[in-house]
Length: 70
Image 1 (tube, rainbow, N blue to C red):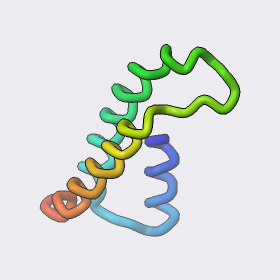
Image 2 (tube, rainbow, N blue to C red; image 1 turned 180 degrees about the horizontal axis):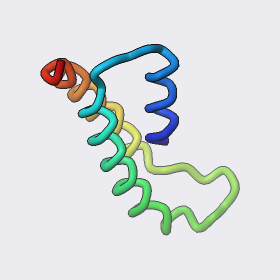
Image 3 (cartoon, rainbow, N blue to C red; image 1 turned 90 degrees about the vertical axis):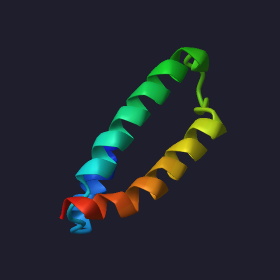
Image 4 (tube, one colour; image 1 turned 60 degrees about the vertical axis):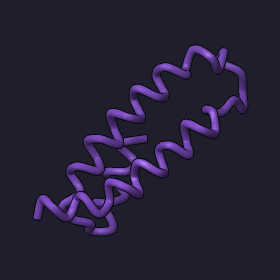
């Protein structure tokens, strides 16, 4: 997921988003890695909605802070 985020931002020519990519990647790896064992490898299983909502909230809060590194 972090790789897709980075690739999408590069395609859209977004600049100065290092903080968003780094923190988003760490949160995704920690959250998804912790919850991966709970999915039990069933087809169609999803990560918990609170985790996904937290990722969206963290991204929304970090987006304005990325402008500090210009």
